[in-house]
Image 1 (cartoon, rainbow, N blue to C red):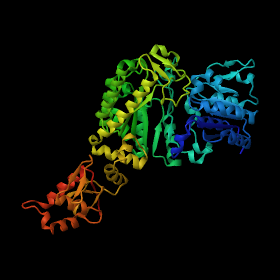
Image 2: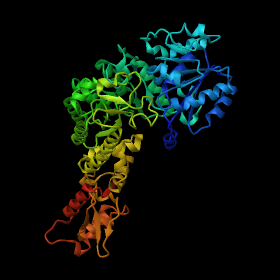
Image 3: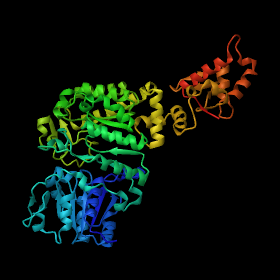
Image 4: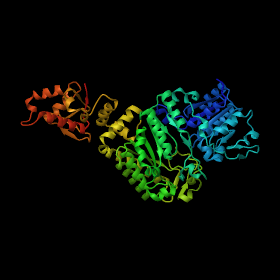
Length: 590
């Protein structure tokens, strides 16, 4: 196999990758491969993690494929592994041209080049066109590099030189969409259900690189092209759940409606999907929520960031606390199963008092829609190129670790506020997570029966898991009751009609307890309740072997179970209703 270019994704967190059934591919590399292939160049994508001895295995692959260009995706995490790896590669393959691209190069081009030696150049911004021009060059030298827009490189005097900025291509459909299996060299990692329907962002968030740009040019793909890619993913990989990874998908109402209507016509809601949205946009377009649900939307992310309006304003979020509350409530009312909201700890002007307000607001959102709202937190990370990175003092911050060398992004403390040092921020972040975990547990019994079924259905049928599903699956009452309902073939008591009750077979989902004298049933709250004689007979006979007709006849034959003047049939039904409330018995129709 001879290649023109090999594109490499190097993971900096191999421990987490090893725990996953697959790693998510870096879609940008596949776009480069697709564009190169479209113009007659052979390209492949290879994944490594930091546990691999990359300095030994990668040169063998380079020699085997005779490639002359090696491209690396660079972020704030893997840059440290690349800093060690690339000099070794340069020593093994001195004629190889190594190109860097990705968010770290775009956000901090000079810092990236200074940190990673022995590279030919870095690409600032979108990679397709500059990368193609590098491929088209017979020889890559300074004379060639200085003619290509969007590059940073060392000139002959060993000084960093930056070429003219790229002009963004308004027609991103020209790039096509990547055929994953065509370029992936890792057969076990080729399946990743990501989809980009547009590039750029209209937001100006101060913590984000996009917020630091003088202007933002949002460019979107044709809906026909997006549907073609979804068809490709479904047809090729039997994918049932797709992540739309645009910064903000729901911006243009007409385009959103067209996408939803096409998804309904094609899949009737069978393909589920996730997207990000803005609360201010949704608050003005609430009537589109039922359409989104019908089209298969099951999870939507809202940028929460803080529970303090003054901090949201400092972030230039452009949303209000009231809009976040209002939209959260309406999304849940529309029947969309999940709303994901993240909060930043230790960000602009953070104090212990603002932290408490954020924690209280996060809990309030969870109470608005129990089982729907998934809350998480991240520690503020200075993102290269963002306003808060470039001018931290304007946000009441002091960056103590500008290169984030002490931990993973969003998961450690890299900056302090005027009132909170790194130790206090870390304590507050742990407090936030612990308090939210407690809130999940407290709200379990407030989740509607319909949403509980939804949670297990999405987990069982689509492998869509959240903090709610993980917690519920750890509880035997919920897991043993709802998983069979989600898998199919079993029913709750309220779904069995009176006409069919006698032929249905009840099956208890939890074992009773005993004090050595009598059986006790365990309610879903964890409370132990001593069974009455009739309750005991029904729960013990509901073992999945007898129909209710069989059970009822056995009970009728036992005088000790019949109360004088009572209606035995109604009493049995009443007890089964109680069992249903405690998720103790499911039913199978014959």
